[in-house]
Image (cartoon, rainbow, N blue to C red; front, side, top):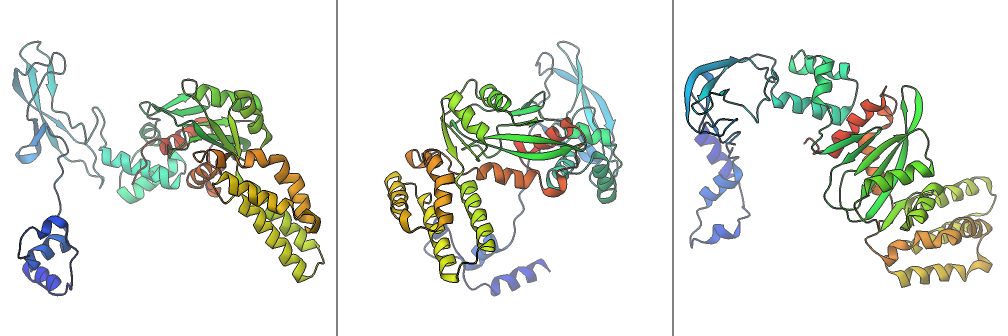
Length: 401
């Protein structure tokens, strides 16, 4: 049956994209190349290089060594039986070879380091699926325990699930109501943003600090209020051993004041500015009785304002800015109001990215993070600050795939 399926597949292939080293031979064997690329070839993965499997579920170390003194001299002392839980809920029987060190008389046994941790009855694959479920769906610990029972046929307590989801201290450090990702170096181009959440029915703010060249946030903190003092402390303490060049944020006044105190460049988010201008124009157009030509002219001038910030060249940016200011006498009243209230007072903070193109011109990095972590249906699911921080810590570590 296998031969028939292979030949049937190969006979229906019209062409194959070959790699350069496939053309070393003068005559290319089409069928062998088709079989190589068209038919999936599974590769065996070595889960632990120091373990070999014997018959009847017996495991032993290839090169046993004493964990206390490191000696390779040992004697075998039978097997130790364990019954860990696997993905289908069954308990399998595994026998691990026991050893006794000849040098220090330490007794030890074979360890399944990549499959199961010591003194734990669950395989790592089960913990991985639980972490992935939490990462994708969120939900309470009891809800996850119920899903594990329904889909994997495994009974696990909510306390065990909480232990599986504990913050990895090797990657993330918890400091009160703040979690900080461990990093060696920062670019200095930071982005900060906040989002409200409800924790046990009380409204709080989750403030996230990002670095331009690190995908996940470098720090997140839960605050009752977005005060200048707290925001400044967050940035100073997280970046104490690193230099900071710029801070990109939305239009919240506290961010510009903090940037001024720290002596760093403040870039106001261009996207939020465009959004505010667009919303103001929409409200105006709904109320006004202007004709269609006037309304189209207003939208055209709005596009010209947006185009100011759609170039990374400083000279081109200010040429566009001056061009629209020169039209001030014939601009509609609403466009003049937007220029006077939103653009002219903030033109310096809105155009810092044209002077240094590494400065993020928007806070999209933080917004995209929020779209993954805090969807509208999960904003009010958490009862404690610790529960939310443990959930957020999953996104600072390697994300499940």
